Length: 588
Image 1 (cartoon, helix red, strand yellow):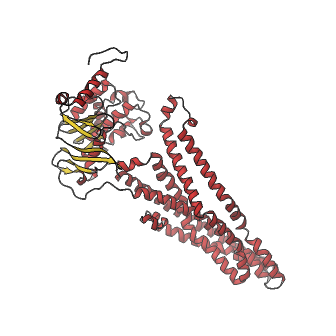
Image 2 (tube, rainbow, N blue to C red):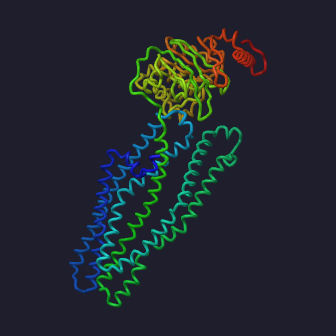
Image 3 (cartoon, one colour):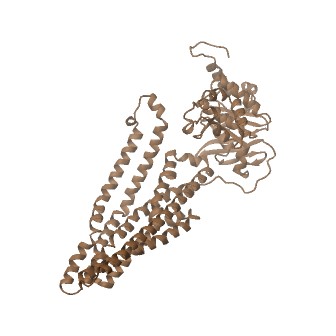
């Protein structure tokens, strides 16, 4: 794949855009900071030489000290400006990456989205992208300046005495080798295990929190959930294994690398004793050697950030490389709201779950799709809304293949309400207005009234301004569904798809909503999927599904007479409806 051949840093910088100018400016400012950072070492060395020569004055020392102070102040000023600019650029790049990821997820098929858990997406979009912040804000603008300072110092040392310069590099070479061995080929395998373990733990934590209601109702605990406990324990083990691998090398690196002067001092002392170097050279070399280690250790440590960039980029490119739903640039004019399925087949991977489905939904009619769980009825609804693309055959709206209709146009044509509805963590009013962002308060209230929301909204402390909580957690399942139906009502699309939309609503409100939907869909095309057959028996057309096949279609009366499967379903339905909770038979 092309991602394997590309440098991860260049791929991340692909998202920089206008932020590149800030990164370049930050690097230049940081380079100036590095130059001013060299000056104090040279000047202090000269001050020591002057003091030991007894050929100086307080005025000379004071002037040179002022130069040191000025250089240190300018170093901090330029460094601060560089850091400020680099952080602004870094957060801009992170924003661009997250926008690109969410755009990709939005344009990818629901089939691809369903392959990953919400925990996996959270880790990539939040955690992995967050890891890039320190690398982008510090490593890139500081890398060049932190290379300049030690290289300049080493050049000075070679000018003063090549023997001392060579000895000063011994500890650096040992430190680099220790770091290199720590990050060898086997290390990357161990590091990948920690990433995989962290991802698995994130996924199970999200699953655990989402299932908290079930856990509490069955008096379970976190420790009794084997997946959760196992994921956390596994992450602990792989993380400890990673630290166990790194610790010996880190110890050598941390102790030996800063000890430049420990190697340099004995050699320099011997050279001084034998008259091979002067006292001035000895002092200058000692002072300059102190300026090698700190920036060079920072450069070496930056290799951690390179690993983080590589790991994060891999996950980012996995999502960005996902196949998007094809969208034609130009499309034909839609004649009407007729929906046609023509020999449609669909499956996940190698498993086909819909087999050659064909039927028409006439404009301004109601078509119900019924069948046992797993028969493929919800899949058909999602294919019409183009959450997935068919594997074979085609779906048309108004005589035009939905693949030739821009997604935005298609979504404007369709209102989709499912059994599991997402509500944003904002007010009821704003959730309803998602169907029509410019709607007035009167329109919102009308839609809420038609969806039977008014009664429960009136009981809430802030009415329409009440926050629904994370994913609507502060509302009941039936209340969330009614808000979602109100959102579809206010959108007022010519095609409405209801996928088990009344499943969690009580019988009284279901009838009211049924009346509202019938009023709403006059002159529109309605496709509905329901588990209660009594709610769809008046449909213009009922499609009967079984094991991914369409086995019959017609009106309620026709199917009762001609379709044994539907007749059985109906008899089972009215049998279940005919029993009260006390076991008494009631009239249907």
